[in-house]
Image 1 (tube, rainbow, N blue to C red):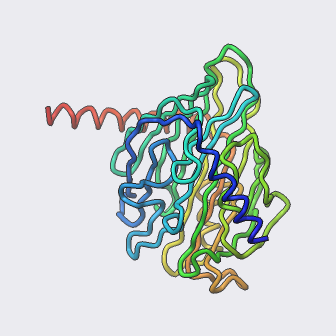
Image 2 (tube, rainbow, N blue to C red):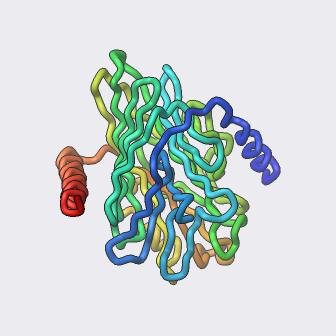
Length: 308
């Protein structure tokens, strides 16, 4: 099984040919307490190549994304085409441009695709500051009604048993989940089925990761779909079970978790991480979130005016 996973990942590495290069600046944000930082790639992936930050616990530098190939990706697909961002593995496909607006502890990445979908991702720390929530809006700007799917994939290398982590799940459930995976190098194109499905349950140890694919449903002209992905890492001394509880308390409904394999028999690994997803936010919650990021834009504009 391990060799099959390695072969599948190596085969995908050749897909970068013909990808469109999008121009943006990567950013790193840090929660208000300074305990956890997140790197945002040039198209909204979770890794900043300049600062070498994926999702980092600052007290000791633990980061489950940084080792080996720091791979995180997102993708969206309709019957018209697919677009994805996968800066450190396959590259970007059908993304015209991405603009990132960042404050000290939050950011927004807006990506335009070649086939009429706009993807806006808002990054913020929630819970105890060790969970990154990515509120995502996909909007259809075409004249047609399209059925869309979306996914995020991440490769975990969890210290101290890097490349030999234990990944298990799912914990919880969500009606929008189509499939999930315990492999960190699944195809970034959401229209391609996962090779190593975790939908019916998984509990494996090896060089693993997580993928979660969701359905957005039918989007008419001008319509949007709102949803959120969650990335979490444990604080030192907390178990993976504690981390999962924190993720659910923060709003994640469906979680695939990973931990170092130095204590996987009773979920007592030294370090852990997860990828999770929820459904559509309540309208009031979404409105408040948008207001918050409009406020972030006002702060940035004010700072520019003061320094002009």
